[in-house]
Length: 477
Ligand code: BG6
Image (cartoon, rainbow, N blue to C red; front, side, top):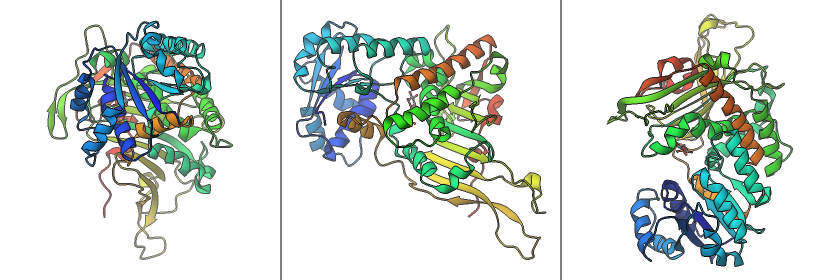
């Protein structure tokens, strides 16, 4: 396990919200090696103790309540701050060259525009000599062309097996459980195809807003921010063929086939198969919030719903409704697999039209739960007169928010060198190819960005995209 982490973008939002708190938790749990140290690299200048003070003010509230001062002191003691001009490859060998005596993990939590100069600087400094590794945060580019450019530049400096591309959704225990559920049970594989499944909903609803990331978000929008990575990775786990083994490449090969089979969006379908929205003023969780006003000349969406199709043998014709939005009424990530109705309906109560087809609801956050919606007769007085009702079979795993935050798992894997939960360059490019087709289609179709009030389920134009399981009233006791 490598013991030196060079953290670029150390003064950024992600470092304060996720990376330093995750490292503190890992230290608390004694999961890091004895000589572990963090070299925080940024453009800002600090006095010798300035960075630690700056950080301690920012990370409060992002760490577990059980964190003790001792662990913080330990993290601070193991962290040193170095100022470097990240846009200038020559600056890195100069200020960081002496770290090359030990294998390191360089983590680039910076805007993608800096990936190329930093990687070139690391290469020149000997900091990418195997077995050193490189971790890249999302976004990996903003379209296929920029992703290819980044991948090519990285390839010139490091071998693919040294490069760890993060999609933090893959670090969530509940997301890994999708594979366990699919491939650990005989039941599901038998019905996992167009023959039995009518449609699939994948939704990530957030209550948070753009929240101080205006600059990034204005250029990104929800499609690039959430669908290109997190939602398409969930889609891959749901739709991929069973891999022959769980090693990184066997799984990535199968995910790649799904991404390549995504049907490019046609301009003629853009305005029916994509709905974009942007939140205005409203109330979320009882609190009034202001709408998002992007800078002049930009038109980003904070909500997007896409109807996607996977053109292969297993999924031909099955719509995958991909939805994500900010400032929704509740936080909820879920996948809903809607099965086809039974072929011949025998019952009077309810009549066929009112019967609820089977549905598998995979809740990923905030709670982790699996519900299988079945029809059952609770009390049938006479044969043939039973009243059938939807009865969910509840396989809840964790009612609470997951135990270990995703970044802890991923940081640990990057230090150990386990690539299984990271994304390969060809996956990133295949995902961008699909996203580019959606953007090109909505541009050609001049599809509007519809307003929606904060605290609602998005624009009314997107109603048909919302999984019923999300907005339904709670089931009776
Ligand atoms: C990030 C996006 O990748 O994921 C954010 O940039 C989003 O906009 C976040 O809020 C959601 O992550 P999580 O783990 O809170 O669902």
